[in-house]
Amino acid sequence: MELSDFTYISRIKRLEKIYKDGQDILDDCQETWDYLIETETGNCIKLNIIADKIESVSQIMKALRDEIKRIKLEISN
Image (cartoon, rainbow, N blue to C red; front, side):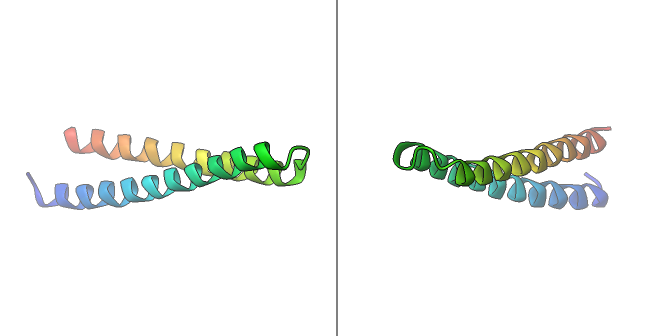
């Protein structure tokens, strides 16, 4: 293992932590979504806000996943 590999490993760990934080946000959004559906039917404004947040976080998480894969491939080559 080379010294540069440790740099990659720390980057991967940091990105994986950010990814986990994103997953926590998605879980919170899902709980809020479920609550709003069960208790406040017809409140489209709140549901649209949650849907936008879910979409944004999902896009960020996809980018993180792609970056983690790219770095892992770079390490393996």
